[in-house]
Image (cartoon, rainbow, N blue to C red; front, side, top):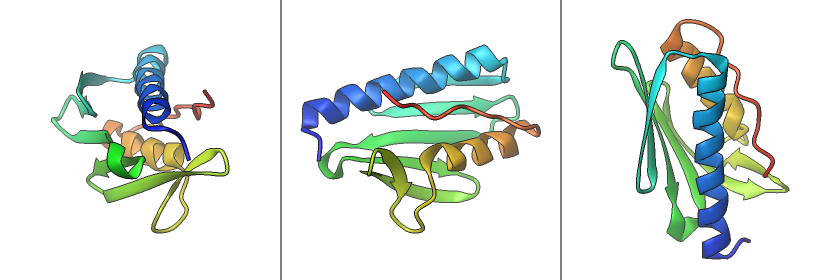
Length: 109
């Protein structure tokens, strides 16, 4: 398990990675980071919320498809419910919101 400060640093870098890759891919989303919450909004107003829950050291995604909680296991962020990988779920949510394939590569840092 990471220390709280390691978790905060890691999640800050992960949020920056998501924003950078959305920009680099030319995907039509607006990203806003406020505290522990990264809001990704499509042109039609559809939102995908990515946030960190520091007490449990979890990352959460809220999208039209549902809510997901991810914990860091064996070097990857995996859903606590079904073991889905964080970026697989995020890419599905982004693709659904964009109406086209969105592919953000996993963050390894």
